[in-house]
Amino acid sequence: MTHSPEMQQIVEAIRQRQRFVLSSHARPDGDSIGSQLAMAYALRGLGKDALVVNKDPAPGPLQQFPGVADIIIADTVENAFDAAIIMECGDLGRTGVAGLDRSFVINIDHHPGNTGYGRLNWFDASAAACGEMVFDLIGALGVPLSVDIATHVYLAILTDTGSFHYSNITPRTFEISQRCLEAGVDPVLVARNVYDSNNMGRLKLFGAVLSAMQLDVTGRIAVVYLDHKMAREAGGTYEDTEGLINLPLTVKEIQAVVFFKQSEGDEYRVSMRSKGNIDIGAVAKQFGGGGHKNAAGCTVEGGIDMLQRTFIEKMTAAIDAPPVGDQA
Ligand code: 5GP
Ligand code: MN
Image (tube, rainbow, N blue to C red; front, top):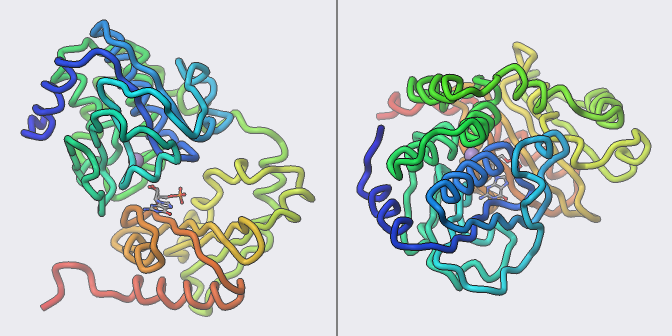
């Protein structure tokens, strides 16, 4: 277990406090839900009060996990708590929840570029999921690994590694997963709940978006696009596109994917994914966004044709960049 001084300070701060509010990024994913709820169960196991407050509800398939129904959906927290534990957020604004800074902020995250916005900050870019950090913290707090805690840690790892696909995986990822299974997690059930419990509109929407997919001239970059009209016609919603971006990467030749989702008018949410050493996190950063080497996003404005050309250019440069370490 990593016993960093940063984590030790957080252990002390938690021991001294009683009432906690927990939050994570807007449009939560498996790692944000898993990290928050593992932490909430652990705090309650220590006899403390833990309230989870998120800007947006969890995606449908994640609603089936323990404790998700009790998450408070709000964009403001009025009261000050003894501490606000923020997980999975590079900056406090990513929560979309105002008022968290009234409390003593504890920042736990693995996103490169974390701004260190907390009174206490623990940042570890080598963690495959924030859930791995939470696992270590819970161990250091001396809380036994209940099946609910272990389920949420495993959910965080499974989803943030793209089902054990991404390059952020370490031996530790499997050690923690092993501990979760030993604690009673059923990996088949978790996978079925996460990946095999969608609605028909989602499948139709995947069909429509993938049929319209385009490739760059080299066939290495896939460009996918969705607007409100396409979603309506397919009978799906924007939330239903979760995970869609990973599918083009199942084609051997495709190295990177960019997904443009129209927000309104000329504004687009951009998601990117890549294989291996291709750093599209750096591309997202150029547009005011962020993320990891293989999964990143940003929000942009402009004509869609021009935007697509610009992103193909930047992603081509990322694919052709010499691997880190080969540079003089
Ligand atoms: P997604 O494509 O699933 O929305 O995001 C992929 C990854 O990029 C996530 O880890 C997420 O935290 C990060 N990310 C997505 N959009 C943004 C953004 O606008 N700003 C920052 N800083 N990170 C983002
Ligand atoms: Mn994460």
